[in-house]
Length: 136
Image (cartoon, rainbow, N blue to C red; front, top):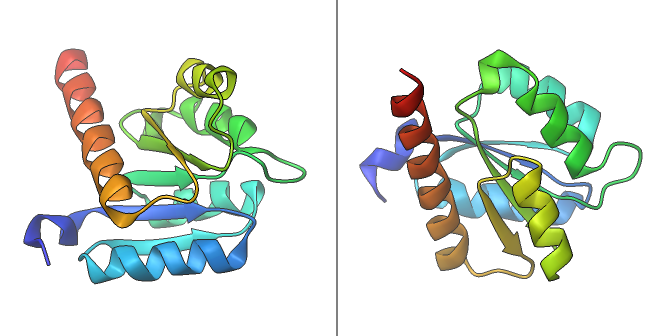
């Protein structure tokens, strides 16, 4: 377990309960503090309560999709430094461009291995840390 991970809080927002729970459990084994939400609206509420450093966000959710959740998060100043990772089955070039345009820091296509997920989390956190330094 990497001790530096123990301070990182990761929220997984995915309407596939099993996928969200498994991702949270595996990330917990790597030392991350995790929380899960199974809908976009639940994810927004959990983000306020949990104060994550990173959100793994599914795009294809009913009612409030991942793009809408991302827009709502990015509109709130308290989430300015939040690392946002699209975690989705949609991996085509057009969707990847949409996630970039929507303010996502990274895009992972499911199914993904833990190495890819951990790398995306690290890169997203590094990007947000650089952004925060530029804004200071």
